[in-house]
Amino acid sequence: MMRRILPVLLAFTLPALASAAGSTALGGVFNDVGLGTRPLGLGGAFVAIADDANAAQENPAGMAFFAKQARSVSFTHSNLFSLAEISRDYLAYAQADSGFGAFGLTWNRFSANLDPEQWTEDAFAYAGAKQISGGADDSWPKMSVGWQAKYLRVDSGLSEALAGGSVGGGTATGYGVSLGMLVKLRPSLSVGFMAQDLYSSISWATGTLEILPMVGKAGVAYRLTEKTTFATEARGQQGSSGFTPSSWHLGAEHWLFDGKNLMWNTVRNIGVRGGYFQQIVNADAGQVTAGATAKADQWQIDYTYQFGLSSQQLGSTHRFGVGMHF
Image: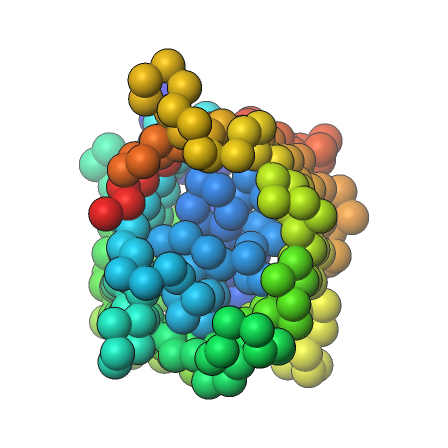
């Protein structure tokens, strides 16, 4: 039964996902509202926070402010819409500036398995960052810039009719470049910017060259206390009629403890977060997110639940993540 339903289902979901990612056809489902478990739990409002391994994807400039010698890795898995046949996997590594700039690597895969037909997209990215002002501890504001270069690949076994006729089946490869900036106005207030896919394109085996429109992100994060942070973010997308708003995002995070004491001989802190994001082009596409983290000295476990308010919502999404700090 499911094999008969999935082709029809994906005929609707794949173009919708591609549209959300800013693609002109079906390639380019490489970017999501929040690839990592924690960013999604904040409703995607992470460009002005960018303080863990997810910064390598969401805003590389944040890596420049990592604590000295800090290194972290994060992995997220999710079955979109609670369907085992549609999944996303995301792996990120980031480390602090050791003299030549901060450094990060990411891998992002979207997969739709119809057995035997499949659709997979992979994005491998290198990210770097450097602080350019405010080096002294008591010097404000502090500013950093970040960059990302990625390699994209699509493997499609779907028929041209199912794929919408724009690119057809086969394979495609391409490259992309993104730039980010993070400004810490004071210890409790930061502003982040990201020009995602400043130039990105993929070339299909059929000869079609697909340009991924740039997505601009701007956000503000305010740390109310040492334990509580609020964040907001707005995004826009380059289109044929110019640069237009595409979505807005809200998020909040609270850590229950100060992270100094060891609880249950293992956990240093527990965090809870929630968020909301709205696609401007579709007033019926609001998404509510909620998540939690259990954090130890060298590892953490993350979870985020995503629920759509749309009357046509396919199903909720559960995201599970693990992280290491060393």
